[in-house]
Image (spheres, rainbow, N blue to C red):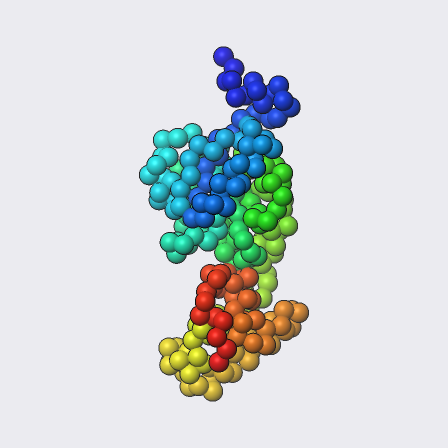
Length: 235
């Protein structure tokens, strides 16, 4: 017996019905995306949504799902790799989407089993195509996926663990003296770390002369979560 939704999709030229779940703690954005996809491709059916991965697993653990659309950074502070791993363990394919270019976090998600990364500002037709590609078992050949994979060889892999820690603290809003106290070095040593970090960013044409610019680089590279209000205050 042919499913009525599949029959309708075939009659209108759309592909087979896919069951989509989504994890995003911005319900207004998700609602808008669902509405646009429903118009563009009625074969994409949202069967479950949640604001956290545990919430989705609890509410849809027994639901048949073809693809999970996962927000890379959630407000509960969960790690992207852990979220992807939990969804993959449930037997679901995962497409990550994000508001900004956070290559390190995206790379971690891909290593944990996500099949692609997509920016949220992509056209809805691109989102629909990406969902179908991932449902077919393909790795999404997007620019974001490629950039995340290349990031393994990029700048932050050459920052020492101490430099990454200094970047995280300072770009997150902590004064240099407080950074020095936190990591157990002198104020001058902390400032020398910052000089080296800035030099490395400048060397790859990503200058970061101010704290705000360092904050932006830290967000882009997954060292800090976006929209951290502490970072707007210059020392």
